[in-house]
Length: 73
Image (tube, rainbow, N blue to C red; front, side):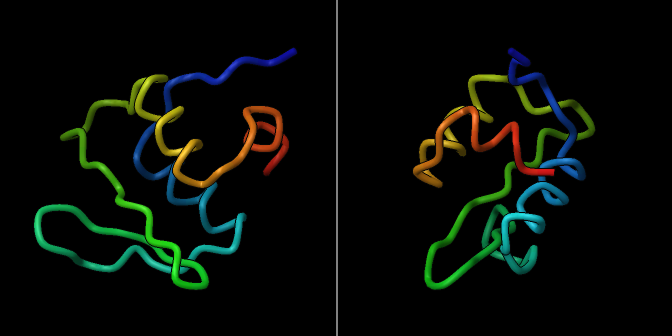
């Protein structure tokens, strides 16, 4: 079974767009994406990859399972 791996901010945005999110939109300190009133903050790691812990927090905010996240292209 594939595991969740670190990814860039750009890859995260592409993945969220495939899940139906719009954006990113400019916000105070962080940009965000939204879908039907659900709002997800997009972290800015300053050219570093997002770690697995942070990606899992985003997955929990989306109320998805790891398998569903990995299945999304």
